[in-house]
Length: 235
Length: 210
Image (cartoon, rainbow over all chains, first blue to last red; front, top):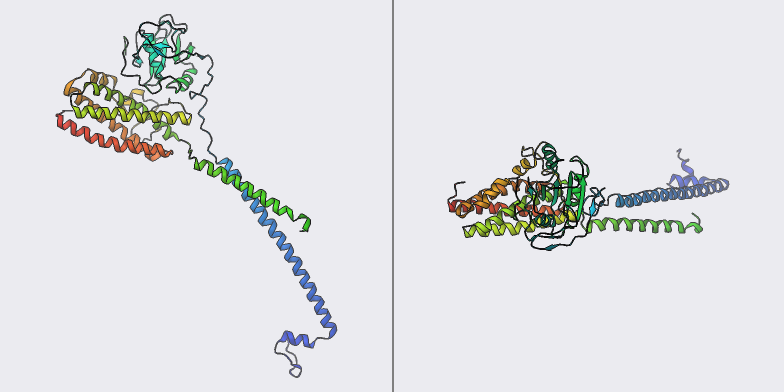
């Protein structure tokens, strides 16, 4: 900026000196320009303010939506490992019954053949694989403790098939025994449930075990399947 | 913004607050009720330790009837009642989690110890042996034994049985996601380690050769 001539100096402030030096017309023009600038400043401020609201508001909305979505997505799912967890899954061909538990001496005439629950001997049959038929009244007591009783027709299940079958069975809480006059080659029984099968490769065998082996719905879950009585021909 | 639309930010703010409250409610609900999802270790430990405990209860009940030595008889009583209680709790974990009691033995164990625990080729008998469990023949021998012979055989079988439980407990302590499972595994590790000491000193006292 070119300094004004020294004889006209009235202020040390060059901006003020410039105002002093202005004509009236110049002063009006300057004030008009100042008002316009102020107006434009206010306009820009309002625009900035609105933009800030949009940015902040959208960001807040995104964050809130994300938190809600996370709270739903991250909720632990109810555990589900298929339907076969003793909660009443329907496996094709399984019959269920309403036998009642009771200790009795002597033989019992069971409504199911092989028996699938009902009155039984005070002593349970030790779980395991048997080469000879086992007493019904003791085997029923084992099922009362949660065992699965696998009965086979030895005329229709070969030794090889029996090995295939036993390899699929748990090492505990299972009785395997031949059963004279069995209505199908293979019958799986648990307390108040039964499944007749033709083949040791039937996919329903693991399903039946998942649903009924050591079920919490037996009268005495968790009682042992050892320490009872051995039947003849225990292997 | 004109005065007539001034209510819009307020409504949006209230909606956002309600949504946040909903989310906070959901988060606190499942952290407060503490329902972590059981993992493969929780489930495998709950299943296999039941199988393991079951045989301990069986052998301890046999020994309780046949023991000659009062200290060993008390130990057998202690083992049978403790482990029957523990396996009842494990049974109920699986019931509460809604998973089957059945599953392949040792499939949850890592192979850090070098054994082929969950190998597809291993038979159920192999897996039980790896868990330190007695064979049927050994249990039958215990049932047939009497006197100090029974006490010594019981100690021998139960020491190996306990030694099989320790790696399972350690694995559960490392890998379980349910706090109570970790806690019970720690209890088993501590309790059975102490019982191992007691059984080894009983072996010395009775002059067992095993």
